[in-house]
Image (cartoon, rainbow, N blue to C red; front, top):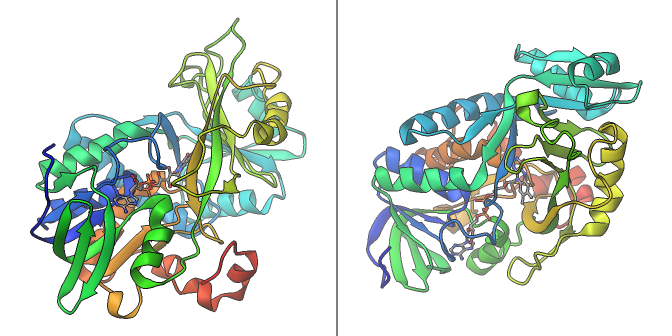
Length: 402
Ligand SMILES: Cc1cc2nc3c(=O)[nH]c(=O)nc-3n(C[C@H](O)[C@H](O)[C@H](O)COP(=O)(O)OP(=O)(O)OC[C@H]3O[C@@H](n4cnc5c(N)ncnc54)[C@H](O)[C@@H]3O)c2cc1C
């Protein structure tokens, strides 16, 4: 990639080349728009939210709108894989389980039923005979869906970067966006390597989005960067393949007060990835990558001991690394334009630890917003900026408010 000054005019400038920026640039380039994708660090760096080995993908969501969106997202992942000529998805099946009356699990089953999506409801005996390595309590229930698995994270970002370039987008890394200013007939994007003009600017800056938007529009958007931890746990060395997808072990989520989720042994022999969906607010520029071992001990280890029949070493993980994601108060995304004179500046952020699986759909949504200003088939009210101003319930739960 050439160094040097950037200049010129584009239909759309996309800020941030994580999974959302690269999939948005791809979708826009496919639509024959002139696109510039800017990244402050090196492409495929490890300081944001999109790097690493794996992300789970599933149809199963308590919210009907996400279940429906996932049907389209799956289709778009397949189309992108066909365009690239290689795969980033591995189907492993998916098991969601928890107390029978857990509201999330009850709603998830209702969503699957509403859209007639294939699934099986399993009682604890069914679970033990089908998955001999798993044992769930008597009052629990499980839902199995074959359509579920793992996306290779860095490989997927790399795929969308290559596809964007193949379809004509211009890609520049080591280029930090310093300011985005609305003008009467478009937007000026000022970077560490010069300025460009564009019709629309799509900001997909991950955990940096709050700082960037504050600088651009004096707006406090309720997206909070969270430091979380991923961990890989050792499987009984006597039988290291026990939790592999080849032996039928699926991706899973435990529905309890604090969700705990995991993937089968795939990227590392004899280890499974199991994490909890929790973390503490942090600054993306100064955060540490140190893992939060206390959180793993308190929230993950007990489940490994309880559910996995003692075949997973649960006192300490083999690999643990601190990472970052950015959450909104209601954990729904923000996919919207900025208000008033800044309406040519769009943001896609607050993916709240569950956005990766929808990346190609986010690309489609942001391209629709940039090109047409409306998004067919998606209930955009769930993703609007002003929902935080008008919904007191969201504010109550909120980490921040508008
Ligand atoms: C540990 C962990 C586990 C997860 N598990 C799952 C999962 O199983 N399933 C799932 O669906 N999702 C999961 N997620 C969530 C998912 O990975 C994220 O939602 C997604 O990666 C967010 O992508 P992004 O492109 O918005 O952000 P990022 O990947 O952070 O990309 C934003 C980019 O913008 C760049 N940038 C910021 N500011 C500027 C600037 N001023 N100028 C230029 N560039 C800038 C950054 O450097 C960065 O590269 C997980 C996330 C984490 C961290």
